[in-house]
Image (cartoon, rainbow, N blue to C red; front, side, top):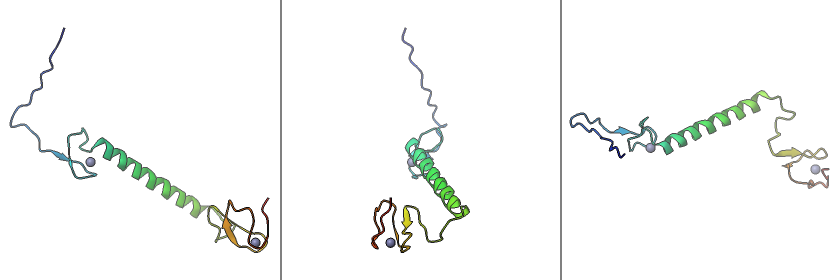
Length: 96
Ligand SMILES: [Zn+2]
Ligand SMILES: [Zn+2]
């Protein structure tokens, strides 16, 4: 049995097109926001939140040295800062 779904589209009851809150383009999606735009916004929000959390974490954590940055270590011999993956310092000190 084949049932054809009627699609009532009464004239005069058409709503004005909603504009996507993210990109400003006309959107017929349920929330008025393009799914991909909503996804983008959610991602941006999540990224911002993660960034803020990381910042707060860095701020709250007592650091051994105020000049120590993530991914950087300092040579115990000459205190020079270098990338954490470097195996030897310019002064000749070798990390284990
Ligand atoms: Zn959009
Ligand atoms: Zn050194």
